[in-house]
Amino acid sequence: MGFRNTRLRTKVTALLLSLAALWVFAAWVTLREGVNLLWVTQVNDSVVDPSEPLLVELQKERRISAVHLSDPTSRSRKDLEAQRKRSDGTLATFKEAATGTLVGWATDEEGSERLNEVFRRLDTIKQTRQAVDAGRLNRVSTTDAYSEVIDSIYNLYGALATLDDKVLASDIRNLLALSRARDIISKEDALLSGALVNGRLSASEHAQFVATTGAWKVVADQAGAELSDFDQGEYEKVSNGQSITRLRNLETLVAEQGPDTGSVPFSASTWRQATDRALNDLNTMVLGAGDRLVDRSVPVAVNVIVRLVLAGGLGLIAVIASIILSITTARALFAQLQKLRDAAHELSDDRLPSVVERIGRGEKVDVAREAPRARLR
Image (tube, helix red, strand yellow):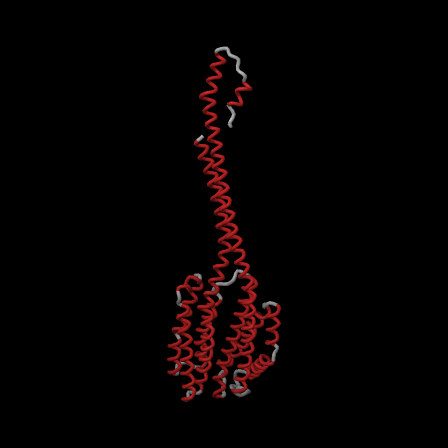
């Protein structure tokens, strides 16, 4: 009987452990989404937000460096030094925020590797500046050097934590692509701004300018076509708007000049005005879509919290209730088994020998009368 009790206890324990394991699994599946939201928020606050002003300042430094190489005057030198100080300020802020302990927890192995690559690229800015000052780089190589640093930041974005919601994750990628297209426009701005200072565009600069022009169009149009319906309409308004149309017309004029012409068929002020408006309009559209994306992510976060409460709270209550019910049921069952064992002992040790003895003496035994006395009470 003791062996059977042990087996029964083992089965009840196994059932309770199975219930607990099922609850832990369900709670973790939901908790994982909550943790992911937490990490996305942490990465956004510590990496993405401080990197955005750094990108803007590096883009400006790229353009001003190209201009300075074409016009190495004291005025352009002063502008370049002032811009370098602004870049250094945002760089220090970014490094301080992105080297926090929580960032290490919030990024996976790929994210950590790409973040380290960003730090390595940022360390090359000093050498690039020295090469620019010494005249060892031309406008194309200078633009490429800064672009490699900027590209590493965009590569980092693609490896950071994302929401499990597929629609939101897709819109995030598309907005990042539009931001990347904006950077490509900024790159072609740097290329042409330097050439406009001395009025000549080399064959290599012309080739790179044409390639850059095609690249941002492909990236922007593909990303814009995959946005949600409303944001897609907003992109089409900007894409077909006056500022982007003006920019594309100027790009076409340069492309049609051919690499052998060398001259640029418009002034620096005309180009500057067109690029500033186009960059501003595209940036406004991306920021607006980003704000709407945040608003749409709120219900997703609320849904995760609700599911966490249901899976965690109610599930835990159900497990506790099952444990209490199992324990009380097991105790009652063990008590009944104990009574059954005692009754069996009484029947085998006392009543059966007495009945056998009476029968042996020839006494009449009422079995129906004796049997109930042997039943479990």
